[in-house]
Image (tube, rainbow, N blue to C red; front, top):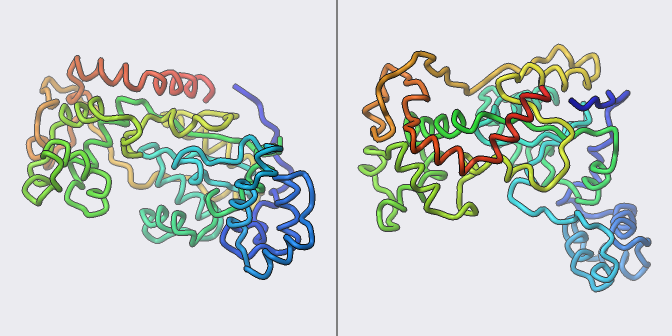
Length: 338
């Protein structure tokens, strides 16, 4: 387990001048030029950018595309390489960068982060929209990369993530997205491609969704399609983590250690705000002799909440163990660290 210093005071992260979509002030333009090119902005560049009312994001894009930058290549980390990089949560009150991984207490942690900012949602499920849309600017995508790069180099900040047992995560995803909530429009946004795979590429109709898919079919789809097209809810957890150094990994089974770590870094007046678990479905702990790997949703839905083990036929367990092998290693590391 790595010991990390507890910051004495919150970091000054939320400087509104570095918001990606605001017009860049002369001071911010100069700071961006120094970050990318190692020099301040010349007067003609300042004038041209000011006249165009160029946003911070536009200035950064132009600097990254400039011949001078390509020659000097000062910031080797200046690209968000995957869809997940811009979704990192920056919690300045605790000096923490948190990686939200789908189906790993994602809703609960986002709700907690918003409550720490005094912006908790009455419906915790709204936290995803509130952050993605920029109603709250906690996500990295809303800030200049030059500012995020500065944070990455600050030893007072810690990068942390929660990881989940890959068997539990995949079965939980199936039960949620292809079982209980499969007819919801917001869920179909994630599952449409899977239904189309089994329907000669055609959009799923109401009958297709009502019938649903088995867990084995879901696994077959994952195995038969490229990693790059997998939805975030069942994409490998390592794919979220691949682009930065992580100071601490925590296991979902020991989420209280994660909460304690964050609370210890918070100012005193925020430590009474607890994490809590939202949007969590309690799974059955009972053993089951029934094999549900090939069952359709209506065969296992209803009053019962079947144990996840019932879906894990031997060959399916073998597939998950291979496909998510790095996730198993990371989860084991998180258990050790936590």
